[in-house]
Amino acid sequence: MASDDRKTGGDRTTGDEDGLLGQVRRKLIDTKRKWAAEGRGLSGRTGPRPEAERLPAGQRLVTNFPVLDLGIQPEIRPGDWELTVAGAVENPVTLRWADFQALPQVRMRSDIHCVTTWSRYDNDWDGVSAFALMDLVQPKPEARFVLLHSYDGYTTNLDLDGFADDDVLLAHAWQGEPLTREHGGPVRLVVPKRYFWKSAKWIRRIEFSETDQPGFWEVRGYHNYADPFEEERYS
Ligand SMILES: Nc1nc2c(c(=O)[nH]1)N[C@H]1C(S)=C(S)[C@@H](COP(=O)(O)O)O[C@H]1N2
Ligand SMILES: [Mo]
Image (cartoon, rainbow, N blue to C red):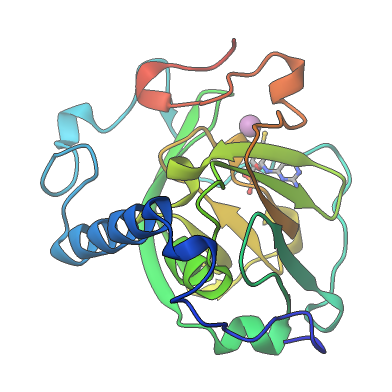
């Protein structure tokens, strides 16, 4: 942890988290984690989508990995990278590279669906799960949304359920190789159940909040929720 940005774990038998909402939230997260361990989908499906339903409407499959961004690709060396997680959380943190690497690491395979109509199957991501990050910062009961901030000035928003899902991670590697600068290295968010603009590259700050704050594309007419299987492209 960078200096004393991270508060001590605190006594969880006191304070907000002891309230009913806090208990419900912990229960909810525990349940989702259990489902994830059992390989259950949150939509009630068991296991992956059938192959015939895997490609959302209006998408075409590609095997390359297109690059899309605002045209600025910030060069952040791991030694200079910092991720702050703050807002409506019990334990705000600023993680540097070694702190991030010391968190539990996972590998997750998922499909990418970009609103510009390309989809790419079977991407292997290595990094830190959203659940592990939430364990660390302990979102407060009132936290209902997340705003992601990136080093290029980009922002994007998610409802808490969108972020706190069993396939969401902060990735530092793709297909077993360190994430390249053009794809958001050193660390990007990956949110497979939403169009890819929600997967912030060059992540710098994660803000938990009571209120929803639309991000860069969301204020420019992109859909707030962005489910590819509902074709939620524009609002
Ligand atoms: N920081 C940042 N993240 C971003 C973007 C961006 O411009 N800046 N573009 C988004 C969009 S629109 C897409 S489709 C994906 C593209 O990721 P890729 O370049 O790795 O394919 O990143 C998303 N994350
Ligand atoms: Mo996109």
